[in-house]
Amino acid sequence: MSKPLPRFSFAFQPIVQAISGEVVSYEALIRGPQGESAHSVLNQVPRDALHGFDAHGREVAIALAARLGIRTQLNLNFLPQSLFSQRDFLTPMLEAACESGLPIDRLVLEVTEGEVIDDVARFAGLIKRYRAQGLKLAIDDFGAGYCGLNLLAEFQPDILKLDMALLRGIEHSGPRQAIVRAILSACTDLGIDAIAEGVETVDEFSWLADEGVTLFQGYLFGQPGFEVLPAVTVPLRR
Image 1 (cartoon, rainbow, N blue to C red):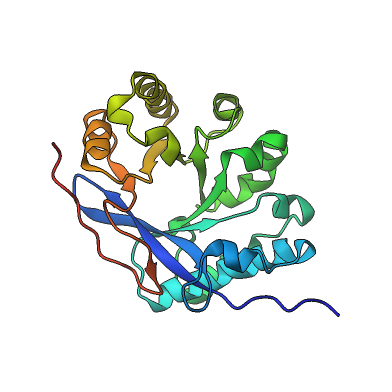
Image 2: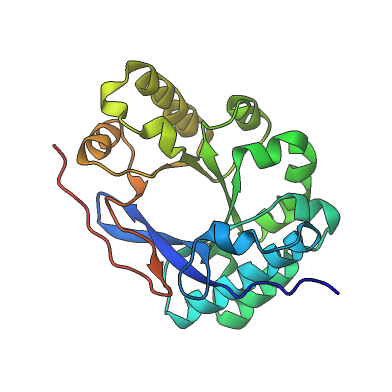
């Protein structure tokens, strides 16, 4: 007898355009039915059911965001190995968006750097037709892995999210500053939007903003709101 899948819901964390102070997107973060952590939910999912659970979760997130009246983009996490197992794996998500009245060009799929580097060419080929329909792709946690620049050389996402560990205390770290400047320069040359994620202090924000970063996600701007679309604050730079 198969193990029952856990109940779950979502929290939403804003991604902010710091110049205007507007929310440009909300990232859907899986939670337990009472707001329990993502880890506590995913730990209950059998390995052989993970990809189906992942797909169903995106449909639930879209429906909930629509009920909450979302008017921005919606970032959805994605296990790319699911795409390899079934070519039309993303079609139910697009149908859910259509049923909820959410245009496809407001959906952003997030995958972590390490999840796509094993077979970049195959992943790019499979997702190409969805991007042609307006679906956007973001690489999350960029800078946390070991093949980031090779990944950018072979496959250019629409959005790149700088890993929070790379940005932590960046105002005091010359090596991190040099690395981030190089990444931002590459993003500019390749037409990729950069998001600084996990930003927690005014000093981090100020340094990044001075380097031209305009899109931010982190507790400094807004914490995840369980089953709500939270408001944001944009601090004054030093």
